[in-house]
Structures are given as C-alpha cells and as structure tokens.
Amino acid sequence: MTRVLITRRLPDTVLQEAEKHFEIELRDEAAPLKLGQMRGALALYDGILPTLGDLFSAEAFAEAENPRCKILANFGVGYNHIDAEAARAVGIAVTNTPGAVTDATADVAMTLMLMSARRAGEGERLVRSGRWTGWQPTQMLGLHLSGKTVGILGMGRIGQAIARRCHFGFGMDVLYANRSVKELDFPAEKLSPLALAARADVVVIAMPGGSETHHFVGTEFLRAMQGHAHLVNIARGNIVDEAALIRVLDEGGIAGAGLDVYEHEPEVPEALRAMENVVLLPHLGTAALEVREAMGYMAVENLRAFFAGEAPPNLVN
Image (cartoon, rainbow, N blue to C red; front, side, top):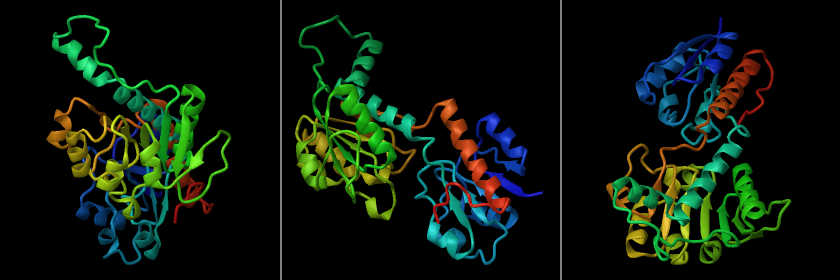
C-alpha cells in the first residue's frame, strides 16, 4: 500500500480520510522536520504531506537521486518553504491547498485592521491590568476605518477577499499593487507600491512569500506611509523587514501594526512585544476547525489523484 508521511497532527477527520487511501505515518513532534528527517522521508515514503516550517530547500533534494517520494502535498496555500523547482528536477510533484484558506485569512486581516486601528489590544490589556478608571471622552482615540482608504499588496484570491470586505462592509476606497491589472467586481485603483503607501490609511500585505518578495516592505516603503497609517501582515513574515518596521514604529513614522506572521517565526522580537501599538497574533490565519479540515481534505485529494494516475487538482510545479 502507498506509504504517506504526515509531518504534523491534522484534524482527526482528515487523518481518517487519509487512512482510507494510504498507509499513513503521523509524526508526534510539533516542530518542523529537520534536514536529515526530510532526506530520510524522501527515501522512505511514496508521498509526504508537509506544512509550514518544513523547509524542503534545494539542499534537502541535493542527494535525492530517483527518490521513492514522488509528491509533496503541502498543507497550506503558501509553499515558499518548498523549492518547487528543485523538487521537479528530481521528479517530485508539489501541490498546495488554495481556495480553502481564502475567507478565513481575509477575516483575520479584518480582525487585525480593526484591532490595530481601534487600539483593541491595548484596551484589553488596560482592562485586564485593573488600571482602567472608566470611560472618558478622549480616552484611547484610534482611527475610524469606515470610509478610509485601504491599500492591498497582492490582489490574488485573499487580497480580493480583503478588498471586498473593506469596500462593501466598510465603504473604503481600495488601492492595490499587483504585477497585473485585475478585473474586479468593485472599484479599485492599481498603483505602484510606493504610491499606494503614500495614500493608504491601512496597508494590508497579501502577496506570496519567496525570494522575490523578501523584505518587499522595508524602510523606503514604511517611510512613504502616512503618520496615522497602520500596516497589517497576514501573508509571510519575511515580506516585512522587521528591523525597519521596529525603527519606523519607534520613530512614530506610522501609527501601528497588526501582525499574524513574523520574519523568524515563532521568534518575535522583544521590541515588537513591548510596543503597545502593535497587535500580535500567533499565525491564526486559517485557525478554524472547518477550514483546517477543508485544507486537509484538499491535500489528501491531491495525493489520492496523483497516485491514481490523475492530474492533482492543485499542482504548482
């Protein structure tokens, strides 16, 4: 029977579905695979279901001549932790799970926008500390989002879902930066990234990770933003130069930030953790049971189709 390694515990319903089709081995560890474990897995299993943090770099494939493993069915839409070209070079297909994550991730973007703009994290800490003395007309005044301008970096599925929520739900004007013009069912203006930074009240990062977008949001971009503006990142942590973000926040160059992802995840700089005007979430983008189940079923279906000789629905290489 086809042997499949699942690198992290998934919802029980997903494991049950996988067991219908494969002989599965489930790792007990919560930490990502190490290089030696990846190389061993490529030799021992027909397929692997990896996820965020399992860094299948070119180095992982370097010694994999004609490996037993023929497919990496990634659990997640982002697959920048997998060198898809290096995988293809040794005959390994790579798939992902788009669609299933779209609405959940867009919802977390809105959560961060509201929390950062309305100082919700700071307010909750105040109440929990016991130092709140009651309502005051000028207490903790934040940014009113309705009718403001949102700038979205990356107008793929998730970027469009965020934009719709902003436009139809909050009456916001939508700006976006993207490699190509998008045909949309709502008004939106395509700009250069720096022009977007200069006009947006809130900038939301929704672009894919990878070498092309590493530190895309750095000092120049952040200093182009308005002083009252907020930055939100629900994409990949290393798109933002965290050191630059800390400097600009410390200088008062922008009003705040809402982050669900980090440059060296799970490490979060002490400087960010100490800032009252920064909202920090533990990568909650898709953290809803039905969403994680849908992602798991999609990954299992990619595996099932591949080993049945069919085209996997979500092949990326």
